[in-house]
Length: 252
Ligand SMILES: NC(=O)c1ccc[n+]([C@@H]2O[C@H](COP(=O)([O-])OP(=O)(O)OC[C@H]3O[C@@H](n4cnc5c(N)ncnc54)[C@H](OP(=O)(O)O)[C@@H]3O)[C@@H](O)[C@H]2O)c1
Image 1 (tube, rainbow, N blue to C red):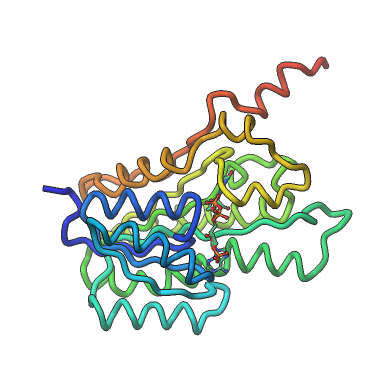
Image 2 (image 1 turned 45 degrees about the vertical axis):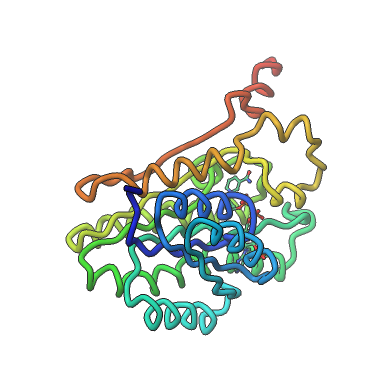
């Protein structure tokens, strides 16, 4: 019997990359998945593949708009009246991410798209999970949420540190309600977000990175852990870590 049969899982950023892989993996383990992102065509494509053997529903929304987030919450309430798992994964980066080019609009995109939208999604998930006295939230932060580095840009780093803090704070307050929060910190993953790097990332470099399916499998594993344990924080990085490799070639 699939371990997540009967579970309702909401995956944000489900139209591509890590979210797509998480939705596929959770559905393969028996969960009914709700797919959210801004582009209905991408979500429909993932849903079509899942619905060959499992169950997926498409609920498009721009998560930076709290009214649209609330509308997804109403859809979940009316259709299922429960929520077991939230994969709080959607995120963005921009080409002009460094201080020499950053604008207030760019800052809004990064903070709203990586932090505020994720906070809104938690406000939708918690009432279901409190009522059930059970629930799991897995947030995709980043290594940039723990380690301050240059590649991702300072505002993305700021937002992802916020995600890490949010997840630990959730456990501190909601553990008494049987709610578990895991913050997932990937290193470089070969997904479309890399297309926003100021310097193009060639295919042979992407091939050595973590792959989306690696993340999907990890998220499925976390979702299958028994209710009495929480994986507070988990890192997943490429073996050929470009940050480490660069440091090996430096001389002090
Ligand atoms: N790839 C990496 O190296 C890496 C490393 C560390 C952390 N991460 C994080 O991993 C998460 C997933 O990213 P990814 O790498 O899988 O890249 P991706 O393929 O670009 O996925 C991001 C998804 O989020 C959705 N999204 C963005 N803004 C949204 C919004 N306002 N409302 C709803 N959906 C939105 C996008 O779909 P639409 O554009 O259709 O809305 C897209 O499907 C992000 O939080 C990212 O920061 C990635």
